[in-house]
Figure (cartoon, helix red, strand yellow):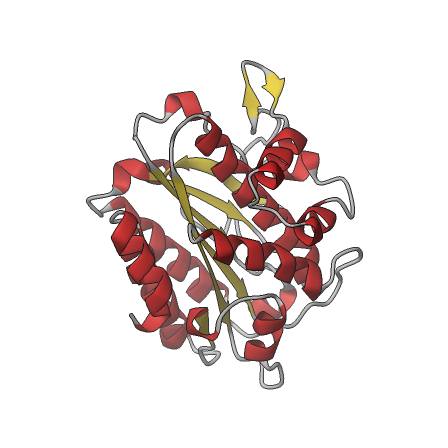
Length: 272
């Protein structure tokens, strides 16, 4: 894993995460419910770990933040799907790095149990997932870490906006099980954040639920505020999992092509 100690710093000082949330609230981008979700526990250090590149170091006049949370629970390994998840992530990174919009794309990967593979960085610098940096064997604190991830997305987008750089975001959750292990967040907390993000019309939140034989992923993700058109439920099969990631990469490329293209991509979901 990369050293997280310098992530989310500017001129050696910690980013004012709380100030970014407050600015978003004052602009009407965050509701009271969303602010409450972000303050159930102190998320500052966890969010800082994903902040990565400084706004001043990004030359593009607008950015798209592509953020992924691969499941690193033991069931992924037990089902034999670890390599398929690695391949799927790497396919997304390669597709975005090869796109015409690559100079405006920043990526961030935080595993479901909180480890940061890479904080926000130019897509060309995004680290590929390998057997050395991804060995799924932990739990599934889906709601806790979804709040952390979405808080990071919101704060980073707000940081760019306050610097006069429009930011759109595309976020993907990947899991092969329902929440098991969250200690402070519930589905309604995630939903409050997703609902505000959808209302802002500058965010796409998507999810892939890898079939475990008993989880109703559409119900799980709906409870988190994610729209049906942004939910995929592939079988526990390497080819099906890679296909789901390929659909996400196509959607992310479409969304990165500018204002109208983003709106069309958001409205079309995985099918459009």
